[in-house]
Length: 455
Image 1 (spheres, rainbow, N blue to C red):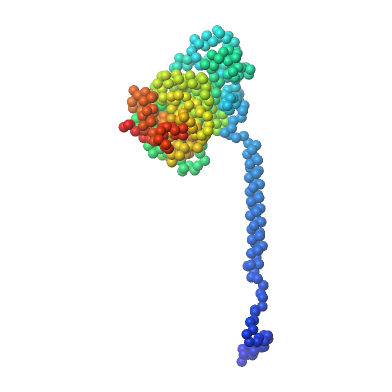
Image 2 (image 1 turned 90 degrees about the horizontal axis):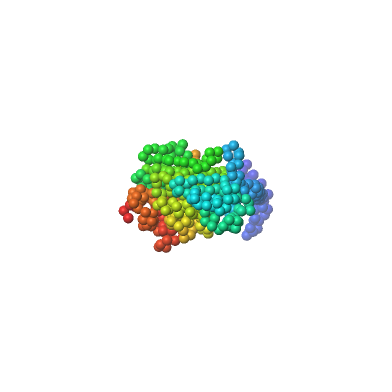
């Protein structure tokens, strides 16, 4: 009875509705969730906009800071090289075509009799004499002059003395290795699946010092023998990065690296010093003395993972080495496809090696040109750093040792072969890429281990 009364009272309070009339419920306020969505979305939009503005501001500040810092890969136009105690040894300067040289130093490469004849003809040359060194293996004399600024060009020397003098002379240019550290993850490093050959091989190289304190490069009879000599002033700090990387490709005993030459006797001539924290350089004077020493050793192949300008003195020495039957293998350079030829790779008879990636695509920074002879994998290659870490490294410097190893294997297996005969064997083994025949990108093709001895 009570429930009936309450219901009646409730119904009595409702408005009367005629038949067919639609009754609309009273409008309610919007749900609380919808009410909150609008200011929340606006707050998120404003927050994202503020974060983007802050990120852009930080980027501008970082770029402005970087713009004030020196590029480690770009050396200053003038730079003093100091001893360990801070005393200046020599001054590097930028010279013709953007190359570098020791300030106002010129080299003469000639016989002792020819030098004496020049002194008799132009006695004033004696006043410019800095050093006179015998190159006993090649039976030549290397003379270093320091000329006044007024004579510091080929044209000025020719005018003051004679164009004949230029036949013997050239600047004391600087040469650089052709290697770049990779930013790829360590697991991206590629390693050779096989050695080039498994018999005893001798090979020479001009490079930086090698860190033989590393277990992977410890001398071990029957596996890795090292004959090393340094051609730099004792008071100059040693550089180890590049030479250690190249030597590791040739002979390292490390799970991540398959050595190209597991029974190697390596003759290492250290001629590179640190121009800065990441750049190494070798003066032509030190290169020449290093090459003369290698010419006196029991080897037939020299690896030159370095490049620089054409120089009459270097060209003359290369000819002398070739006349002795030596095979010279050199990095083509990392100047890019449009770069001018680099030396010694571009000299006639020198085997110029470019780099490709493991998938056989050309290395994007490699030089190209008619002087390219062969290619080898030299991109993201597993190699040792100076402190013993295995990291991916790239450059034509890392490709050249592959071809050097192939040449050395052939010449060790068949010592009677000439350089040209070995070159023909390499042509037969090369994996041709692109259009058939030699091309300016990869030359005759890619050389890969193992050596095919049944050609």
